[in-house]
Length: 276
Length: 306
Ligand SMILES: Nc1ncnc2c1ncn2[C@@H]1O[C@H](COP(=O)(O)OP(=O)(O)OP(=O)(O)O)[C@@H](O)[C@H]1O
Ligand SMILES: [Mg+2]
Image (cartoon, rainbow over all chains, first blue to last red; front, side, top):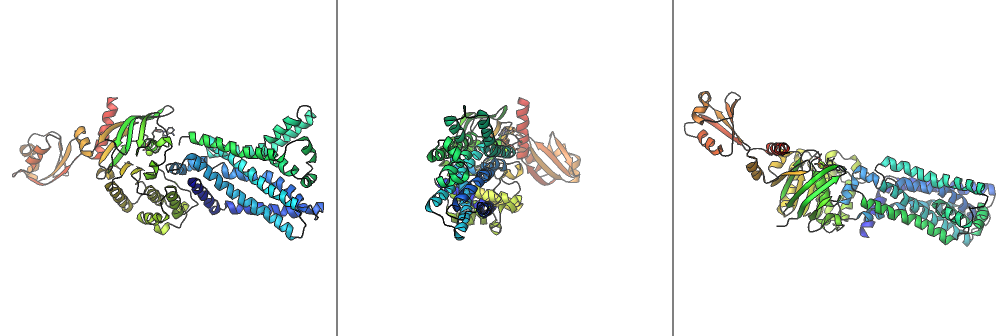
């Protein structure tokens, strides 16, 4: 346990030093703030549901951005250290490989969580400061949006580690990471939508659709946030999907958690088998 | 007798390459052992095996009573390693880097500053490692290997890039640790440097251990001639066989010097004659076979035996 914290602390120290933390926080805060104020202008809702609109726009931002950031910091974690030669020395110390991996995970996730929390809270804080009325349910939905965003980040960090533990070269890891991002964030949904149109509800209904949505962490995240609260789903245009896909929030959260834990376990396995 | 490091019939294959072939040796406490061999002889591979970073294809390894590849980490706390191309994360300072490694070995934070002082990095401790010169990185590498009074030190080409002053104090540090009972294994290509420092030499060639022993033992086995150099007066130079007796393999160098390659059994006899009352010898130097020559000899004899 102590080794994990020691490694995590070093990752955070490095993240602070090479400005990863600063850059990510500023990026997320900047985008969140601009979405908040640009987003609420056209709908003209400065009323009770203002935060719900923000949740919709922020979770769309999260789906694009957080997986990208997560993959950027994680794809290099193992193969990069091996290539630079720092892993050789680290593993000669009294620390197990799974501890190194878990330590990095804790460190990287802390950086991402810090940036998300600060960036998104800034947006909500700014909205509250303008005098918008926000009810308790909206706050709850906002909090669970932040929590699930961090979980989405965790899933993609774990996927990045798995790639990093499997490939021989950093360049390959980078390429695969971008491919994974494109696949989950863009291609998967387009393909799914295309299939739905062609299929006309013949095969792709109920259970199959649910399974397909759970097989992509980005979709699980989207469903969780856009259908989670009645207020939000009204704005998201997801009400239709929410009726078709009969997935309750806890299943979606479990899917996200599985997307973090399974790749992490596989990465630990691949890493432990590797010779350096 | 069991040493701190035990290697028994170890074979390591990387695909088709046999990096280590059936090597056995034992390293006792309080000894400095030099591991020498050509590029690709298997020196680094042997050290990685001792660290458990790679597993032997066959054979067994014990370091401080543990199997290093079995995931027991107690032994590693008492183990120092300096990789051949040591590298650190560029973003942290020297002080932060060393403090990180100290925490992993459960060494108190206050052990960091004296170590930095010892390798002469105090002035650069607050600078990012990315700005360090090659020698400074090597110094930092040495400092981390020395953390926590190691019982076993594995140093892979430790003096590359060190300036002469630190090279000297490096060997002093090693000698001090050895004196307190540590086992020091160091690989190097700088054979002349090792000559006075290593109590024992292991010579590797293409994965095979070709020689193992103290310098004296190796000299005895190799039976290489000792070079004797005599400064001779002009008159003596004209009739060398007269006063030196029948010797083969002598030659004249620099006009008034005679150099003889003396086989081990004739060495004393030749020296007696050269120092005899009437001998026209003004000065005399004796050069036993160097590690360089021994190394070449053992490699050659192994190559021809194949
Ligand atoms: N990970 C690896 N995969 C494949 N072959 C390897 C690997 N590591 C080492 N080898 C091979 O094993 C042999 C021994 O390598 P090793 O690094 O032990 O040599 P060395 O004695 O340290 O050489 P040098 O003096 O150049 O440092 C070489 O032929 C090398 O190519
Ligand atoms: Mg080597």
